[in-house]
Every structure is written in C-alpha cells, then in structure tokens.
Image 1 (tube, helix red, strand yellow):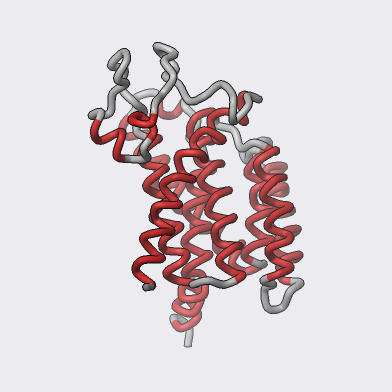
Image 2: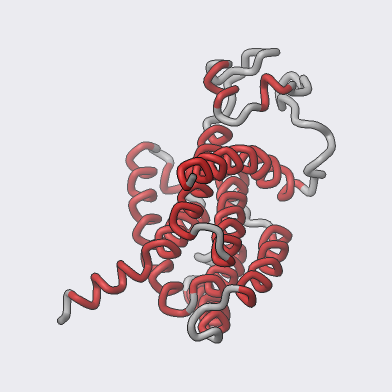
Length: 251
C-alpha cells in the first residue's frame, strides 16, 4: 500500500509541477495564472490535453510544439519530474502526517521560485508571501522542537542575508533575503545556516561551470535561487544527518 501511495504522490507532483511552471512564469509578469489558457508562446496555439500531460507530452512530441515545431524549453518537463519525485519522496519519508503538509508546501514554494529565478532572475514577493502565511500555519500545527527555533531561524536568516547584501553592496538580491526568512521559519536556526553554506557551495560550482561554458560568463549573472532551493531541500531531509556527521569529525 505504501508503494501505491508513493506512486500516487508522484503523479500528483507531476500535475502540480506543470501548474507550478505556469505560476513561476506568469506571476513575475503580473499575468493571471488561469487566463489565457496554456498556449504556445510562438504560434499562440492553445494547448490541448495531448500537449499538457506532464513529462509524457514532451517525450511524445519529441520536445516540439505540434503547431509550429518550436522546441519546448527543457525546464517544463524537468520541473514537472522534479516536483513528482520530491512529492513522492516526501510521502515516503514522512507518511501521512502534519509534517508532510509542511514538506509539500515547502517543496511547492521552492519549485516555483526556481522556475521564476531561472526565467527572470526574480523571486516574486507574492509567492513568498502566499507560502509564508501557509507555512506559518503549518509550523504551528507541526512545530519544531523547541517551537521558537522557527522564529530564530526566520529572523536570523533574514538578518544574516540582509547583512551580506549590505556588506556586498547589492551582491545579494532582495528575493533571496526574503526567501531565507521563510526557509528559517521551516528549518530553524542552525539548519538555516547550513542551508546558506550549502547554497554558497552549490552556487560556486554552478558559477565555475557557467564560466567555463560561456565566454561572456563573467558578464552574465547566475540566479542564486535554484542553488538555495536545492540546498534547502537537502537540509530539510538530511540536515540532522549532515550535522551529526560534522560533529562526529571532532569527537
């Protein structure tokens, strides 16, 4: 039965991942997420059911629009698949629990801001505010131990990123700063610091790869949101193990 539920959560994740692509691409442009219907941005053809099956439509259509043959961006199927895998993994790890609500909301927010940051170098305030409110309620229902660790994490994460932004004279975006408030709320103080460390490490690797692949890489900014999202997911599920491993190095 557990396998059946895991598969079900994977399917839900695929469906919601498709919707999160729409949210991540439309909200920064202040467009409605329900109107107009999904359409090709090149030929403006409204997409049908055949075009909208998460991941599978991309495979069957060989990554091209049925109307004009324009290549479909890789981000669509990748983010759908990532959301499906993360939803399934969250259920596999947490089962039917109040903490599963926190995990699903947290994953959803991180997927959306990843799409937005990749597309526009922007993390929308509306997305952070919407999920921030929901995650506050979820953390009340499923609090950290101690409960006030969420408050320390939220204000500590926000303050630390704000300090970095001031010292670096704009080297840290406003969206990243607000994002760490929500991350701190979910993870708590120490895990939030670990998230920042891992995000910086991942971001450095991405930056080096970007420089090697692009001659103009030094002039092209690299979105930091996806690195933060990946680090936050790792810490959410494995932060305790990572911290235990680190402590054991000095025992």
